[in-house]
Length: 309
Ligand code: G1P
Image 1 (cartoon, rainbow, N blue to C red):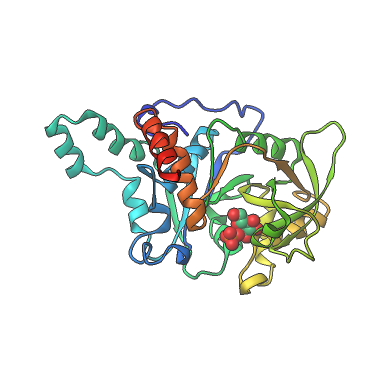
Image 2 (image 1 turned 30 degrees about the vertical axis):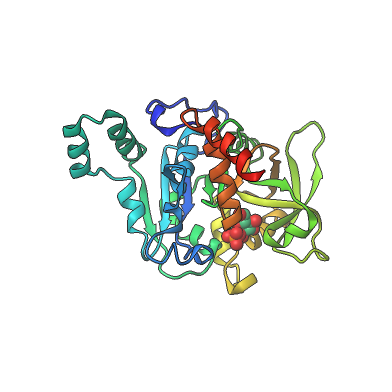
């Protein structure tokens, strides 16, 4: 991921073949895995080197050509809205100091907007969070990006998924191969190849199966491009695993349904993904991305070698 300060001007990916315009980013989760750090601060604001994790995700959506970004927020998430808003006092102070680089960095996140916000009143699960975006999204395909997964901007994923959605008219999930013992942390897909295509048919999906029950080692990661038919499916999806309305369960129904908006397809991702969902994954993401920074990457790597030995 390259340094955000350099990126006032976008190179929008060539997603010409896609009609998808909107992104939904659920950010209402409590962040219990990072307590006490997240007691008074949203987990999405945890810094990954020097930008909050959420900024990478919003940046990815915009780079893929999604011009309308909706955050599904909740209680205690004010800092997210502030981060993507102007900060007149701070900007004024930096201007007076003549600190152009920091001023650019501060203005960069508000220049990504305007973003839209809807609140998820109750923590009823990822499926419910997506459903909260229904009115804003309307009757068109849309992307969902989960903040725990950061996708390296040198490895294209979302634009490919958007094109597959437009070509198939169904819904698209992103899949990675994981060690079998890890599958119980993810939605899991059973797939078949489609001749001549680089995407796959998803025959069934199950949320966080045990290793014995998992139909494969293909895990769903936090990027989706969905047909709006998913909203009706979510409306009639009963609470599933952990008593929550699961997006995976609604997609399982679309995978086996027939008619408009049915069918689920998978793009198997083999690029660089940083899982910031737990403490170890988060630390690895920070170290990996920091070690690639021009201004201190080499020093950091040299120090790490010494530290490890
Ligand atoms: C959610 C989804 C799961 C998916 C995962 C990807 O789970 O329910 O199917 O594999 O995101 O990050 P969560 O990690 O929010 O429990």
